[in-house]
Structures are given as structure tokens and as C-alpha cells.
Length: 115
Length: 114
Image (cartoon, rainbow over all chains, first blue to last red; front, side):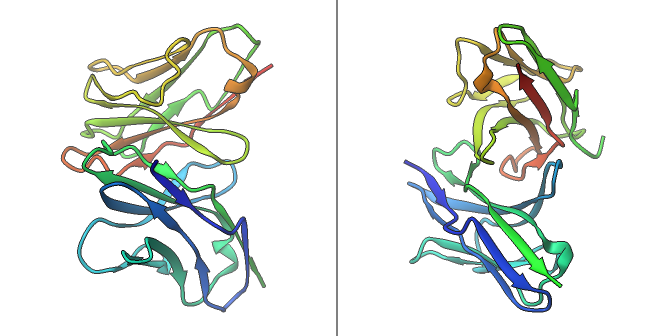
């Protein structure tokens, strides 16, 4: 079955330090990978995606993610965390062929950035 | 519009009552997706449309859930005879022609079944 794993319920980082939020996936075809952020009582905001091409993708607000096919991972990174980055982060995948563009989400990782 | 619009923001229903949620996709987008986010943040895909046609309904609990996307009307998700476990936030997302994997999410409708 297709799945996404976010192994950490919460990640704590000091402001100014680099952050990593982990994601691994399992799909039967070629993955399309996404990161979304959710602030309290808000919808999901798109951060970045990997479809094809360069394994390092850059997105909104200084975030980037690296696609690693051999490790089936798509970790989210940022060189210097801000307190305003504190939110809930979701990794999602669809796949081709056969995924029909429906997104499978991880359970979410809460990022807490301390001043 | 430039954003996905969902109404109402909040909906409270007694168990057994009907609930109807609406979604207006971004203008020009031809794909609409419905997802359910339950209490532990878990997202579940329900159904997708390409224009007014059902594209994938593998996530729908068919006995009580139905959905439509009709021309020139908001899309709708209807739950007949709601149950306590239907309490969740329901998100709609829309995707542009040719790139349905680029999904833009609405703010969600919080359904509380009492």
C-alpha cells in the first residue's frame, strides 16, 4: 500500500539554527512529492514539490527539500529557523501511473522554534 | 477567484442529520479534490472530479457520502445521516488543467456532529 511516514511527532529547534523535518515514502510508481504547512485553524499552504529533475528543490520562505530515490526520502530543510516557522508540516505523495493525483499525507510533524 | 472558497466555516449537526458542504475552486481550475482531516491530523482522500465528472471516488464511504460538481455551481459534499465519527475538518483543493497534482487548498469546513 502507498504510504508516507513522518517519524517525528515534534521537532524542536533554536531560532537561527538549521532545521530538518523528515519524510519517507512508499509508492508503487514514480513519486510526486510535496510539503505543506498548516497554521492553527488554517488550510494547507503549499511549500514545495518534487516532480522530476534536480533532486534539490527550493520553495517558499527559504525552505528546501532533497529527493533521495535510494532512501525513498524527501526531507524538508531550512538553513536558519525563524520563530514564525513554528507550525504543523505535512509531507504528501502522489504517484504515476495509478495515483490519479490523490495525495497521501504523512501524520504531520509539529515544528517548534524557540527564541 | 484566486483562492479556493469553502462554506460554511463551521457546521454543527445532531447525529442523524444531513450536512452539506460547499467548495468553489480557483477560476480556471478543472480538478477538485475533497479530503477529510480527523482529530489526530490524519488526512484522508475522499473523492476527486475532473470538471463535473467523478475522477476517483475510492475514498468515499458510499452509503452516506455523496458529492457533485455541476457547471456554474460550487461543488458540494453531502453527508446523509451524520455519525459522531464524521466530525472532522473537510478540505477542498483545486488543481489546474494538465497539472492536477498541484493542489491548492481551501480553508476547510469544520463539521461537528453532536
